[in-house]
Length: 86
Length: 399
Image (tube, rainbow over the protein chains, first blue to last red):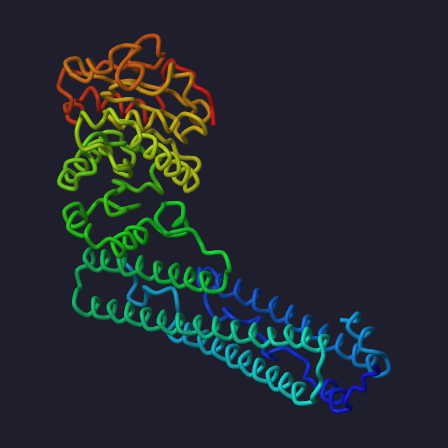
């Protein structure tokens, strides 16, 4: 059986926004005396947040890209093959 | 005397509030991001696609907004902590301003400044710890050891212990020169003298009945006299649950548990000031604790003194592991009935450390009873010699 993917799905996938909070958290803690424990803790937290943002963007990007590839393939193949693609 | 422009908080007015605002902005951005992702997902859901492949992908996509929301919640909590810290910082500065207005006596003002400044340092440390606790998946260790507070000044550690254990305030008021280093509901460790600047520090491990709060005043007096005699700092180490009677002292479990804690404490002390000369004095049952601590991994001490010991858990001094070059000493007053319990090489708790075969440096002190050591000039003189590097005969192993 051939599955015809609704065109609306493809359009919707293409419009998915690029992830990322869009706020630079790198300067968090910079306004405090650098020798304080709080400045160090905030800098460490900011580094963790930045890393989490990066992982989040990667993960989201990979999923959307994967969905696009599946959507392209599934448009003219059968259901069994489509299941193998995911 | 601090200058009139001196501040007691490490933070300028408004600095913490500004950081709180930044953290809030991040939280809002991540929450908005989560909302956008949810919109994307619901848009895809409305396209009417069905099938196992889509179900699998959708399950994974649903996790992504959740991670943004979790991050937003953490950032919002950090913002709350920073706001609280800003308020407390302002409170400290307000108290300092009032103190300056109320007193022109430089000694009193200096003491108030030192106290408020230690609270300012404590505020910074606690604020940092709370932020780390929220943002780090692995919880930091409990704050109940000297090592877990290594970044704090002695005064700030003292204030923190008192904040956590207000039941100690009366004891602190009676001994204003004591600096509390550790405490639990039934143990306390307090320093006399500045352990951060003193050339030597002597840790006195107390014996039977030392967990009884009623006796802590007396324990502190003893340790204060040792600090005065040695010219260095001395520590009342009441950091284990000691047996409350002599018959119960035949049980060795408290010594084993105390030995672990004592070993950790001495290690924390050594990390704080590696170049300092460290002496551990195990008094009475405390000598069993100290002896057990020097077995196995060893004890960070240059000198180990068994005082009024009922016997120690080692065959000879060479079985004990101390810092490189460490020495073992023994002091038992003629007439102290503990000598009967110690009983040469087959005492109730092990070997008498004053026995020649044990191999410790034995110091002659004045005749007396089991509690006579702390006022005996010869005992205090021996401790002064030991803590100042006077060497003895035994050559134990090294850590």
